[in-house]
Image (cartoon, rainbow over all chains, first blue to last red; front, side, top):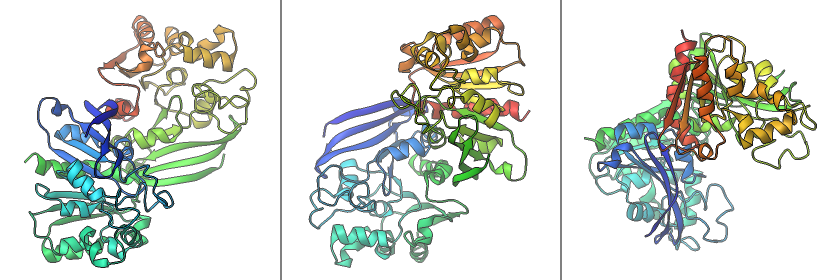
Length: 264
Length: 264
């Protein structure tokens, strides 16, 4: 669909842009951010997708994560989509901070009144087309078709079927039948994973309030990955919380992790 | 005065904190941000002060500039105060984006109704006590007592007496007598400077809309510094604007510039 450039700022030798387009999947106007490294002026560069979590728009990552210098150094394009449909006038869409607007989860809803617009899984995989993901939306990455083979995440919701956030979102978007939820649960997906070899880096703040509230459940994912011999580097970072100060602190490591594969 | 810790986030191996205190100079509650590098846990570290510009609070710098990794590497403490008194209930304080709340300028007002609260120069130099400044508030740095000897700035208002922003602020805070303005104009101050040798780094976006609107006037400062043999590295950065994407892009160079002196 036609792209409108909302903003363009020179940054780290390249350009940080925001675009708006009419999404056919979501049936609303959507915005996403794109960082173009200097190398992209003369060469084709690989694309790394950042999928933000609850409460974010396309702007949180590009203003707070400090990703552009690393991406410029390694010649990576960064794409950061918004996290949900906006302005669809669905009853209840703005009622909760952890459901609806700004918290789309990356699922294709099957239930009314969400199923027409809340199709973030298809939006990301079909319309925006990720090549690589660094995100707290592990399920999308794990289900992505090749050439996805490197995945990283900050404080991800590893096993949404087993936590209050996931249960609220999945029952709202997908209905009560729990077997339909499995398609979007990273831990479940990992247990039957048979795609190309993944290389996963996960950073988790040890003092993250949502970790102690049992919303994130990384242990469940790590157990399954160990059983399936999926290589995961899980770093429990002492003292760090769930804020962008945490993400900023380790962003360069994640950029490097992906650059290793993308520039291989 | 007593400090209340508003927030504390582990960041870049250290801590990004925000404090609130009752300012005796400004007669209101003020907030400022402090980044403590890991080195500060065991050693005394030098302090670098960041003075933000128009429309900012203590948060813009710490969330958007990407300064903490560099400061951690070089063992610098960063202090970022708010830019004006807040909530003083002065008539007209919230009327303009470039005057009053969020745009205090770093002057001690002499005019009613500002003179009781708008004492940002004394607040910064006496109550917060800078050792080093990186800022767009050059006048404060130039007038600072030793040991200030390294100064840097992003897109500073170099000659406020000659631009609309400065004229509006100075006539409002200081009254019509232009000779009283000179104490806060970096270009005028540089022309009679006789303190310790300064080392100045200035980055300026070439596509900064406020540069072309003649609000910044770096040429005037550079001319005076050349005459006075004050060493200034002025970098006109092609394609960059006035946003934090610009500041983020060159923050590491400024940190390094100061670390050279502070760790000497």
